Structures are given as structure tokens and as C-alpha cells.
Image 1 (cartoon, one colour):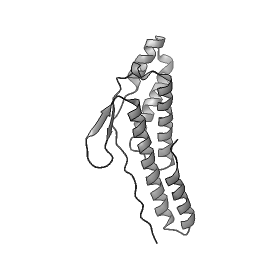
Image 2 (cartoon, helix red, strand yellow):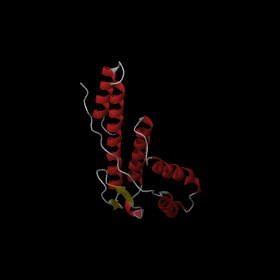
Image 3 (cartoon, one colour):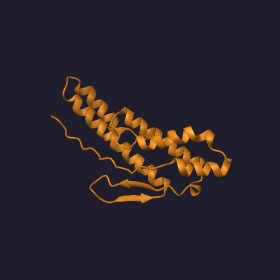
Length: 152
């Protein structure tokens, strides 16, 4: 008997440029930010890369990496110094309006929501694959593990 699994849709987000606010903060501290440009560009690119990832190991790895970087940013930089960053995320269920906030907690919550969404999509794809071949038991076990995965 085939079970039907529900997946959680992902939230969409608008582009965000981390380089300018972080560069301004570092400039106020050190006076020169040329040593940090590669890291700033990599961090900004990571934020752009999470938009529209596939529900697979690569997509999950990108989201986990971005979340850990945002968490480290939150621990090391006083958010009140770079509050000019505005995060915009769209409602996952339906066509509601977008939500904008300058809170880093909002960004982290949206990232965690999308990690859960990717895990549910990945689990469903593994379950669908396993029900088409003779490895159904192994695929079902992996599906269950993906649904039980605790984010971070």
C-alpha cells in the first residue's frame, strides 16, 4: 500500500546584499577592509545561492552552511551596528504578501523553515524512488530518517 506524503513548500526570498553593511561595519572598526573582501563576497554569494536550491544533499548543505554563518555573525557582531539590512521573505502557503523585517532572528527562522521544507521534499523524493524499485524497505527507512532529522 502506497502512502501519500505531504511536503512543506519553501519560502521564497528577495536578493540581499550583505557586502555594503558588513563592509561599513568593518570599516568603522579597522579603517581598511581589503583583507575581508573575499570573505564578504563568499558570504554574500552563499545567501544568493540558497535561493531556489534543489531538495538534495547539496541544497541542504548550502542552507546549513548559510545558517551557521548567520549564527556566527549574530554572535560576533552587535546587530544594532548593521541594522540597515532588511530581510524579505514571501509566505510559503499561498500567495500572501511578503514580510520584511530588520531582525536577524527573522532571517534565521526563515532559513530553518526552508531547511524543514527541503528535508520534507527530499524525504518524499526518496520515498517515491524507493517505491518504484525493489529496495522499498531501505528507501522507507531513509525517508523516515529524513522526516526525523533535527535541524542543526
